Length: 164
Length: 83
Image (cartoon, each protein chain N blue to C red):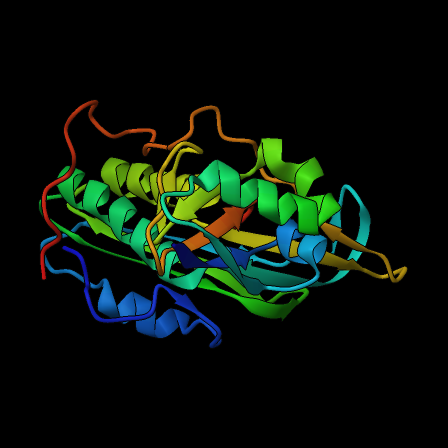
């Protein structure tokens, strides 16, 4: 079930207990949560901070499209995804995905699907601020097609309208 | 007749353009490609990045041949890197 009214992309600190409470579901046998955090290192060197930039209205739309697909695959259960933007320090939480599903396999699979799709299609960018003073944009993968369809979407068939 | 198009730059494109947004006045029925040429002429660094970027018109991914309408918002999107 899609939880309609919350900011999928936010400048606020992500509230993990609240997200867990929102995805608690008595019809589900388990909850899988992915918590993405800022690492103190990258290929470029030691990381101090990461600046996240986003095209917020489009990012919100893309997140809802991902949720449409999760909704299609998960008739019973609850899920929620939030991505933080702005300046984040080492250890800060940048993204949380929580999926409650009747069985653990579904919960693991859809949580993984959620984070992979966020990284693939949601218009968010990050610039690393390194300890030695350098700044470096993290280079995303160049999309193969002009329009990136969700990896698991059924060809020629869009997920149904979002449940309100 | 001309029309006014708002252009948005994100990520590396924001740095390349030196700004997050600007307006272009272009002839009626100009294409996305025409607008990109105008932007590239103004910002040489954008020209170098054009091949790897996607374009969104009014928040939907669009191809270069799309004909623009007055008031459209065109965003230049480098490869995404969220998470």
